Amino acid sequence: MQYLSTRGHPDRKRFCDILLEGLAPDGGLYLPEAYPQIGDAELTALRKAYHEEGYAELAFRILSRYIDDIPAADLRALCAKTYTQEVFGTKEIVPLRQLEGGLWIEALSNGPTLAFKDMAMQLLGNLFEYELARRGEQLNILGAT
Image 1 (cartoon, rainbow, N blue to C red):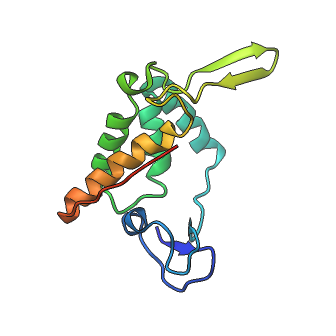
Image 2 (cartoon, rainbow, N blue to C red):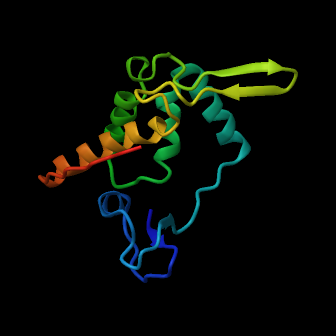
């Protein structure tokens, strides 16, 4: 899959390149050149995967539609390493609870910092570590909230 800048820079890049680059050269954000379509049958398969195999498998199946430059086995392992009960404090990772009638609430604050950003930042750290190791590079990142 190729990614392009929201500000029109002509270069197209792969996921692992934009992962380490951040913003596009023209200051734009990167977006997929085209978005994968998910039909009813695949949506049903994703629900089944979530219920039978858990959140990490669901994350892998969705992410693999956007990340094709990390081998599937490696991406699956990164998701399994990221979305664990030990990291998120619950087997469900993002527990969904019915409040009343058709009203539901999803808990997104079970990660290490108790903030919704943990859902992405835990994976992002593992993706950075993986890609930097593949390239034989190092990087220091300072994060603040």
